[in-house]
Length: 287
Length: 299
Image (tube, rainbow over all chains, first blue to last red; front, side, top):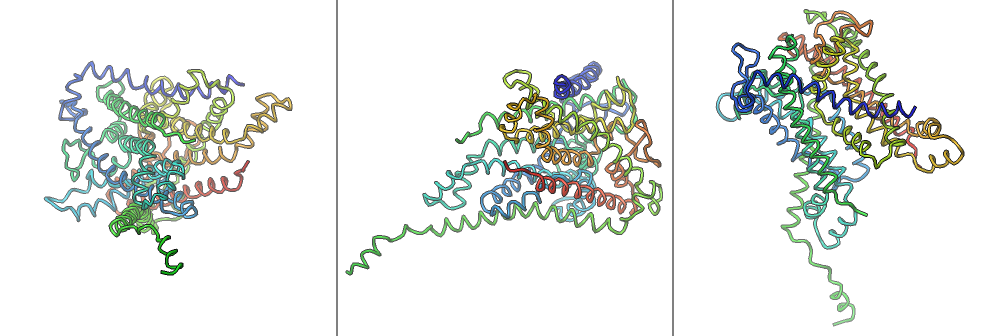
């Protein structure tokens, strides 16, 4: 019986090994066809065309632009929400507000994608300040909505970190005549910084790995630009788009999925490990 | 100078906070409140927009009619049934395995062994792997490759089970850990074996917490589309799954397909299907909260 229980626990390791094993062989085969330098520095991404172009930078740039838009919303407002909940809201109100915000985190990403494309994108087109207004598909709408999606995660995890700061620290600061602003900015937030940084990193990792919103709202064309008003393809959207097409196993096009998947896995994996490390390493242990 | 006046002078309060400081404090409150407002406005706008567009098309036909190329008669019956099938398989796999893993890690694993720490760390990292990567795993090993099951409900259920397994394990571990040691010690002291202790004391006491975690895990699974797209789940399936190797579609994929169609009618249907999905999720979340409040024990 204990053996069976052990197998259950060991399955998670098998899954990790499975992920790595599913990624490596096709990736290795891919790099026998395609030069690693060309892959990492090339500026044209058209792996399924003839002649194919294997420069990954356009979809990396797409991922970056969308992520930056998302983070620009999620970090400041998420942290603000967390400080609001932990320093200002009364415990009874907090008990109601926090689950409400967490509802946001539970909404399926296709619904966010629909919202981004049909509701946010027209506003982005209308309110675009300079130059030609963007098309229906643009990185900005996808990024903004993704920001709304990961905001609750940032808020919830940061609030947990702030709640773990002992009341004595705050009360000490108040006793010395500090205002709420001073207590929050010089005592609570610095004391909870490791947890907040971990939440930020996790949020970035989540944004990089998110698929459906960008697949629906950001457009499907690889595009090397920093202009968030243009249509772009991200790494995840490429994988999903290539996965829906019926690529024959063993073709270079099929292997491209795994090469990009490896890149995505490595990037998010290191961010997650870093985030876990930060929490454990720099956590102030009280009492 | 009278005595009273002297006393008053002695207890003169500290200088009041300067105006600048109070202004900064006020501004800070406004900034925080606006941040909080962004979250709330985002939620309200999303719900309002989806309900406003989708409500006219919402109704019984969503679960009575099969998909069609004509938006006037199209429904999502196969997607609703596909979702039920996939979710059933996901639960059947992830719940026992997840609880088993949690019981092992909490009760039987020796915590100073390197492999125990490694497994725990590994589970934490798996929880952060993007869902599309699970899709790649499914594509390479389950749909094609060694298992070669094809784009079937079983494949879909298996992938989502792997995806939510870390959530189930982490929630179950916390629930088991919350049972006070005295219960465990008492049971062992009365001569129960460790397995009997787990089965008769720890699990029953931890069930509410585990159930809450399972529901949250399943509500994550119900909204996932990306990994299922990867294994080649279909967007047009005019029949319900009948066996484990049936082809299938699920609600998020059906919504994704409808969003991509140009006709206004399909946009409405997509919103209507979103409403259906949100209502199901609302029920699941309400159930989780109810379970937590109803059966949570304070030791």
